[in-house]
Image 1 (cartoon, rainbow, N blue to C red):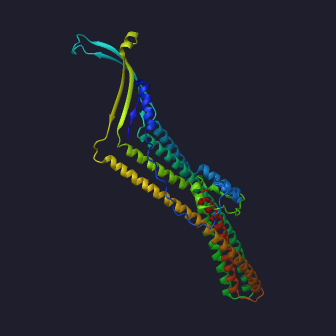
Image 2: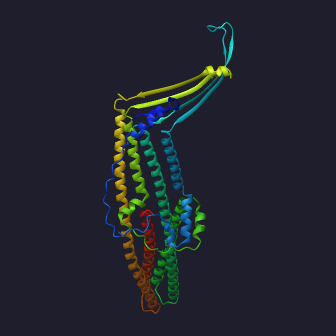
Image 3: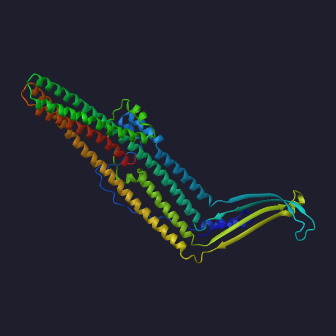
Length: 464
């Protein structure tokens, strides 16, 4: 690749010639078209109404969820790191563009010197002033695309950093929402557990009164008290699991668990929104920031390959300088002290032991790796969407069956308890009915939470 530096002192003719050469120079190598990859067969293939990202957390109609997600997006440490990386990539792009622009430097020196009387040519000491100023300029005309390839790579790196930042935003919103929904799920499960704890305590108390009256054996009392105690012991364990999710929220929001607990104390119940349309697989290429980032990295890799290939070509440089070296600020002194330089130089690589070609091979391997990573990212995105859709469908089927199971278990528990109180059913049937009711209600609460979390995952998989 040729490097050509020019200075205005060389005249308009040289500038016009260089500009014409630039216009005729070949463009930097472009990456080949990205090969299509298998895009799957998503059951929802209708076109999407819009490919713009939306604040999907508002669709759950939960003000607490919206507050937490918005706070996470403004305070999360990982997001702030990604923004800093975007700033660094933007600075690198400016530096790459500056490599092809004129460069002007101004320098100056001021000094005073005393020469020894014993120096050659001197009979006495001599003191003098020295004032020096110079203006130098250079300009690289990119004939073989080295600078253009570097700009292409830097621009693509910036685009990749921006898309990485957007992807980090999606992941933080996803993790915050799913963690919050897990907390609310534990709240529902704890409410069920405490209701069942109270019911079993009532059963144990009723059994004790019967035992004291001689109407029930000691074994019935022991069984009732044992089950009530077992349910009571489950409460602290579930409270610990909830607390761990609260701690996770505090990390995501970069705040204290006390602040999270205060926010969670406000009323908030998420409702299941309508599922977003999954769209056709091509929509993922436009919406998913991780796919856009992978594509940008392909462009960046081929840009760096262009820089490496240009290093095998000749380089030319034009320099110019004008300056003055005087001992005093007088008209005569300044006129005699002026100096200038106009210089053209060139070089071509002859032998470097294969260093430049090894760099080309390395850049080519990196470009191939970037292309393969792009294809893997597209396949992974399709798999995520199809997995989220399939999971939601199965969770809804399971929830419908669990709802019927929970209703039947509650009805059966009420009937068995009434029969027991009437002396028609043994205590073992009551305890078994209570265990079945608790398990059915708990499973239903978990399935409802998983549906909400699955919808969050679907939104994220679609790149919203």
